[in-house]
Image 1 (cartoon, rainbow, N blue to C red):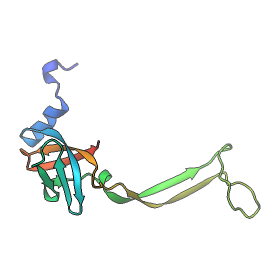
Image 2: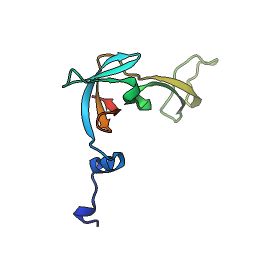
Image 3: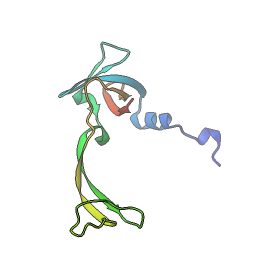
Length: 124
């Protein structure tokens, strides 16, 4: 078992990778095109798109998917030629996930490089 002095917190790990102070702040999305976020507790701090890193899950994106169902107690009632139930099927394809940030939403931001860059962690 590692001694207490050998354990590293996530904050220490991030600070070690970035080489500076890392803070988490809240911001409100003011505009989506271009993306602008205003700090919740600092009306003067406006963060613009060129300083933001937006993770994929906070955007609209296309991804592949697979949907399958089977088994004795699961079925889909639908138009079949003989009036029976569809009990086993599999579909594959792509879907578009609409999850982009919207004006008015509150987000958590990770401030990096002494406030020169920001990574959006997630919605509040």
